[in-house]
Picture 1: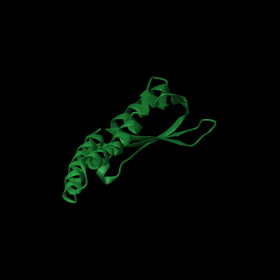
Picture 2: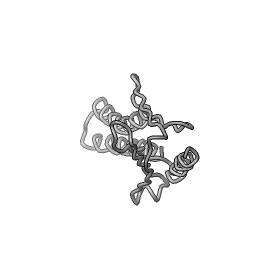
Picture 3: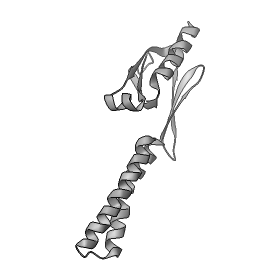
Length: 135
């Protein structure tokens, strides 16, 4: 959420700067103001994209809901999980979030990445604790 707020703040600053710059070169306000407001569409896109994914950890599965209007739910049973890894870039570590990578042994196989999770080690530990409890 911090990047979304920062994105909106930067878009507002850039919009004001654009209006001032275009006014300086004699562009009428009915052209410069809509152009400046269009800059707010950039953080709005990322805000909307962030709200399109929801992760839910229950006592028996991980649910991954994607979509805005039409939703798709993917369920990963905890019994199929083989490994849980936490990955974080330097900026993610500084800001306290990262990715939780879940390796599973389902029919499709492969890994599932839970992106940009706040305090990812806590959730990885919860998941591993639940896995140990089930064994």
